Length: 256
Image (cartoon, rainbow, N blue to C red; front, side):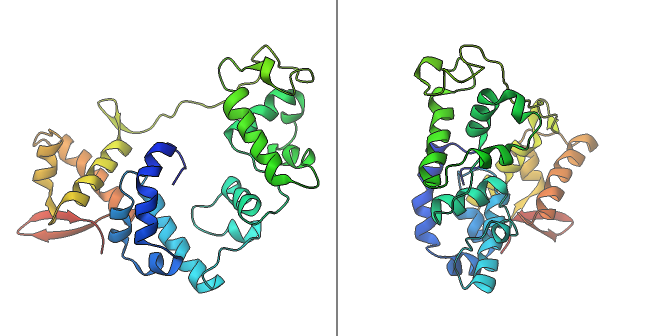
């Protein structure tokens, strides 16, 4: 839920989601539409479907309990290296490194020459204490979030400032190229995808293409129709909605 979504937004729906799906079995047995509705306000809806799929695998293959091995965690839908290591460390007490954006920034500033030639996970593992990985990883994450921040880091407050070659000068900046994502009139298509799902969440019956075009202020031109159809086709491929045809008009609704 917290992937690319603010904590304040997640907190609004977290308890409601858990009350609706208190365990993996209830989540796995729910329809995709039920899960998408419960996911309201918590970011990209594809994550809801991945979580539902993950729940099914956990129920079938692991008797309803999340595995504690990183290699097994990485086979689950929607779980990458960071999430797998975070679960292993914070949920199961495993002595493994956890590298998020904040930790990556700290390592890049403290070890600027090393991180260029070594994998960030290898570097993080090499400085990991033999015990108390939970506290160590939490401390690094807090350090990056509160002190070693992206712009104007508070170097005087940092316990590493005497050993850090980047202290009092921002040398290391994680390189991130701006996304060149599909858009319409400057608004990314992913925003429209989210708006369509929200419309279907609130609808008591399937929604027609003419109604969607009217909602988005689209004209009855080939260009506008093709653009909307491409968005709807993408949502269908992702399993986020279903389509039915009535009297030559397509209607859309959440799956299940």
